[in-house]
Image 1 (tube, rainbow, N blue to C red):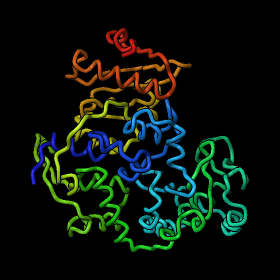
Image 2: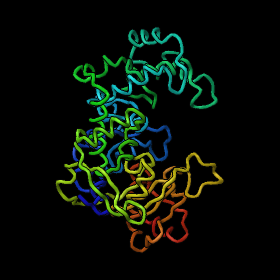
Image 3: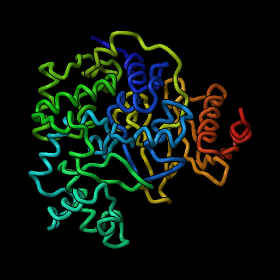
Image 4: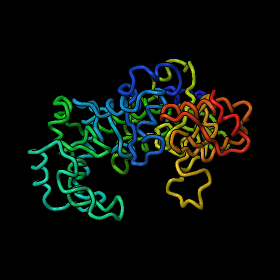
Length: 390
């Protein structure tokens, strides 16, 4: 089956909940299950990324409502490693058996596992749920995020191997409890083979992305070596349930590229209104920068980690989605009750006359959502128009 680049782009936007009314049905719970994973990040600009992901799809849903939907009691989601540190639907717990086994076999990830793990696990069993404050604190020193205390390293290791789990947070701190207590029994007791885990996760990734290359699917789950081979086998043999397609315009000089599509997505043409919104740098729509360029013709770099003097677009540049395209980018901030667009630029060929209203909608909607009542734009040509409330 041959898809045009435009057809693929629209299928992707619908799968991601950014085209049509279905993306708003069921609120945050349904959104998480539609996306398969929502990335977490410590950076908070306007709001934290997991909140921005929900806002982009659902509009001005209350931030407390978003938090309670993610971290609910009893558990409806949990935190673990997918594309990165992510919030995942609790029913996906068995699908990460392969990763928990892999960590257990390696006995190392970012830190050497300290002695006393059994004692720490016994403490969680007796006193849990706990935060790092209950077991000695998170930091060994103030030298950086990697300078964890042995207690923090131990808790994270126990989380990696599935002995404990985080299904809630308090003040952005993880709350750890025994997995057997926090995960519903029907999910906790299900142990799957590596092949079954990867096959089912590939299907989930395909449904979330809509249309994706093999590399896109690998990036979604972040697998390599043997596990990547299992993903490729699941695709080639049909076990993942995705349909091979060719997408014109995705290759060099417009050549077709082999990809995989969700058969449910192919069953009907996408219809409905496109979302106009700011997009988090950690949104699954733009996780894979090569895919973002391929799908949207939008070259994006998060300059958060770039020295200030070398930044081109700003600290936390958020793409502007409108009409199904990424039409520009803004570096947002807050100054009291004012939303500040510290830098704002439109993509080459994007007319300010044609798209100015969409940009204004994106800025003012985000401003209102975070409780701002005015907008300040550092852009000489668009300032007057964009600073005026729609």
